[in-house]
Image (cartoon, rainbow, N blue to C red; front, side, top):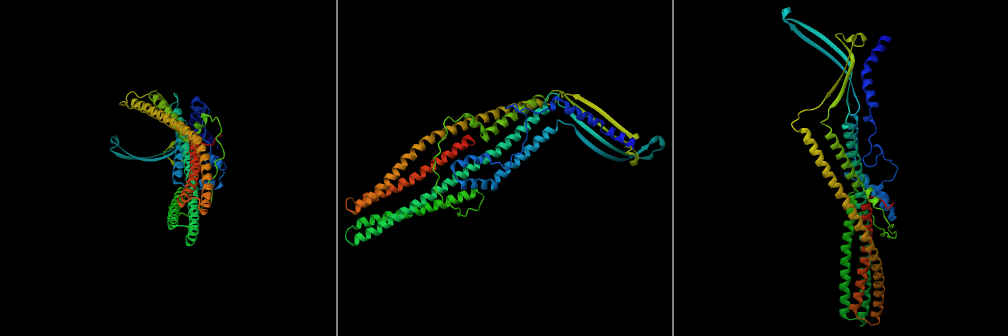
Length: 464
């Protein structure tokens, strides 16, 4: 029994030696993040925590919107594809990291060989060979090439995760915009229906006045014409409402049946934007972070390519048993072992290594240019949204005043017409202005909501 225990210690001796070298090597330490200096880590997201892509939506105080965004996340096929890509990138990062450690191979190799020898009159001799071995191989990362490759894999994984968050942010923005467009369409339809009913009531009143000789035929026909036009507008608004419902349902992954409930009002944009927003907020944008991570990955790839021409050191070793009899494989008397090192460098590769360095350098330049483009677009989007916010706030205030004044003017015009103080054209003009200003107010409210969404998308997250 002691003899067999000693045999197994012999089998693992070389593997333990190489593994020990790996764990004590300086190159095996944690890889610092190129930007923060902190060690890389692959952490699982808390499934119970709300997604950063939905926190900003709570600013509108609309629980229905939050539910629709979550529904869109669950049904979006593109988001599933992005998550799968992130999972693949994580696996690739682990693969690149595994290259820094020794690998262990357990092998069982039975063989049968036939030979003929002339000095034995070409007599046929058959031999059986059985071997059991535990082999290990490890490339010592003398120059940090494997470490750089691992850093590139981790950066690509972080970029893929950022792509997922960027897509979620985009989806949440699209859903929010589609939802507010739907609520505007609902309000516009209701305004058109109310206007049609109001004009229909005026037509009935004018018909009674016409029968008593208090209104002219021209007054009656002009009012009937405007009432018919108002009904036509309500039909157009009904079509637009159905289209808005189907657009939202498509984003949610539903069949576009046009049955989405819309009996809600547009929320008031009462919350103002905090003053002195820091430019650091833009750095949280997932697409900007993804671009920065891909730039970091390209720099690591360039570092690895620049070190490919340096000599490499590989250690190999194996331990096991070899015997012509299968029953002797567990007998330590038939044990064999080997250990070897290989230190060498490529002298000629037809320009391949130089081409790899040129390629890596070009990729770095391209990723740096892409990062600058994304950053420039981000700041432009923020400035556009902030500028529009100020203008839309003033526009909303003035449009609300105009809508209220036109509504009161329409009521006053009807009273004055009944007393014979104004003609029918003044009354119908007052009605038209009241309808247009009420419609414009709803549209401006939605514009401000849409712009606030754009600001959150430009910042990447919430104001805090």
